[in-house]
Amino acid sequence: MERLPPYKVRCTLTFGDIYGQVLLWIMVIFMSLAAAMALMGASRPLFALMAVGLVLVLSLPFLLFAFVTTLLNHVALEPLPQGDTTPASIGGEALPERMAAD
Image (tube, rainbow, N blue to C red; front, side):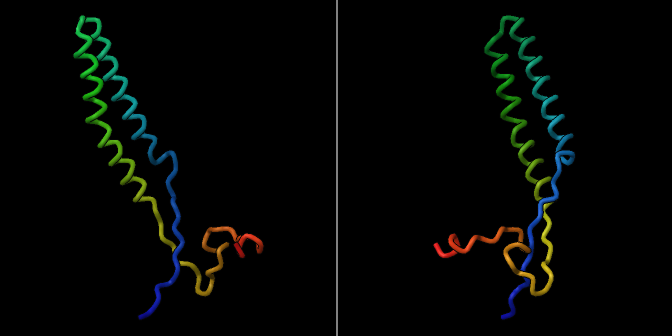
């Protein structure tokens, strides 16, 4: 059975890739808080708390799904050059001699 060549895993995700998702979720949170404050003013504090909780519970799975799929789309597997499998080339740092012996 032939061994697969070594790969280097790189994450190319930048803040700009998720910036729109963060802004959209903040906007949803502020709108739910505004609705809650309006319900508080209408002497319905229980409905206000339930509205904020419902918005958070329903929006959080969509936010996590968006973040995770964006992250997975930015993971890159790059093959290492042939014969270049030292720890420094893989992305790790070489250990000092006294630590390697432990």
